[in-house]
Each structure stands twice: as C-alpha cells, then as structure tokens.
Length: 122
Image 1 (cartoon, helix red, strand yellow):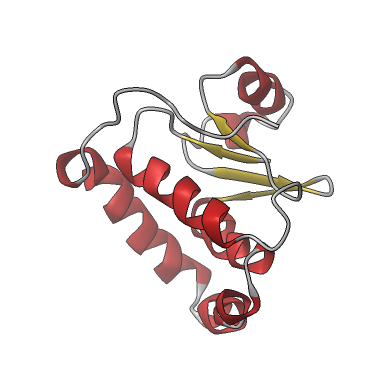
Image 2: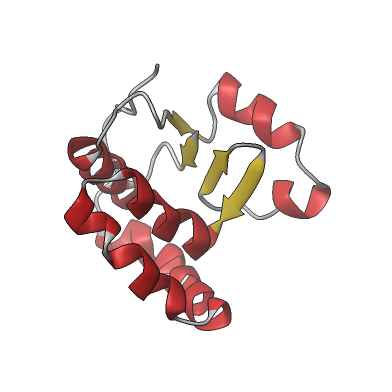
C-alpha cells in the first residue's frame, strides 16, 4: 500500500505516474492519507512513524517513508524504471531525505491541488 497526501498535486502526479508504469497493478494499492484504510494502517504504526506526516509505503510488513518510499516504488515498475532503483538507493539517506523534505515543504506552491482525490482503490 502506498499512502499519499490526498490533496497534493505532486502526490497525484506520482500515483498516476507509477500506476501507468507498473508491471502488475495488483501489487500496489494507492490510498489517500485521510482515507479510512490509510488512517487505520497509520494508527497501528509506532508514534514516530505516525508523526512523520509523509508518504508511506507498506510492503510485506515493512514501512518505508519519505525518499525510501518514493525510490522503492521503482521496484514495482517496468524494467527500465526498475534499473534506476539501485542507482537512486546509492545516494545516502540523509541527502535523499533532505531533498525530499525541501520538495515536500514547497509542493503546494508548485503543484496545483487536485479538485478531488483520484487514487485507485483496490
């Protein structure tokens, strides 16, 4: 499950981008962070993860947040996108997360908010 901000234009673009390029669309479900499913999952996480206010990727019992979640999405995409995964993973986590947090802070200024949440619900 990929949990994204439901009123963020960047998150919508990310979800649409990943969804169109996935090998198997049943592998990954998209949810808005304010949906019942997502809130239920987030409420079961540790306090530090609940307070992260970020993108979450939950796969096989593991939780990935921030840049780790975004980069890990590459693993579920077609082969030419999957090839970018090890390259992106080499970048040190503190640097990746710094860039992620800067983008996250200004995303609403850059990307227009969608009129409605269109994340696929499986």
